[in-house]
Image 1 (tube, helix red, strand yellow):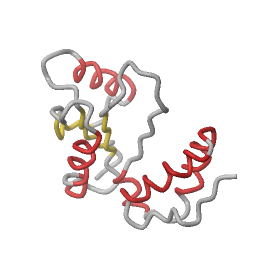
Image 2 (image 1 turned 135 degrees about the vertical axis):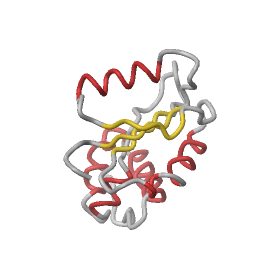
Image 3 (image 1 turned 120 degrees about the horizontal axis):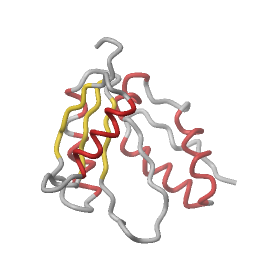
Length: 137
């Protein structure tokens, strides 16, 4: 892949309204040279597991350094924790070792002990992720 960004989109938006087009418009405004491809916009609404399975079964077919944008929000319109997105292909391309864990820990530190739990959960999704060294003070 050349220097042109390659981006995939996976959402639970559906295709019956403006949302996918609006998201692509924002991407085009920021990175007009990017190549944007749809994986699906028909993830079961609000179903994070369905979104995770979709990405887990498709990301490895894409070139290294592909940016995978996944939007599945189980709490639209509710008070909830902030959402965090990780690019699994970038993590795969560069290898996931202890370098990612401190970044994630710092990001989730305001959540207290729940931050450690979330870090460990993310570790289950990414091969080679080492969440055993994580301790939140």
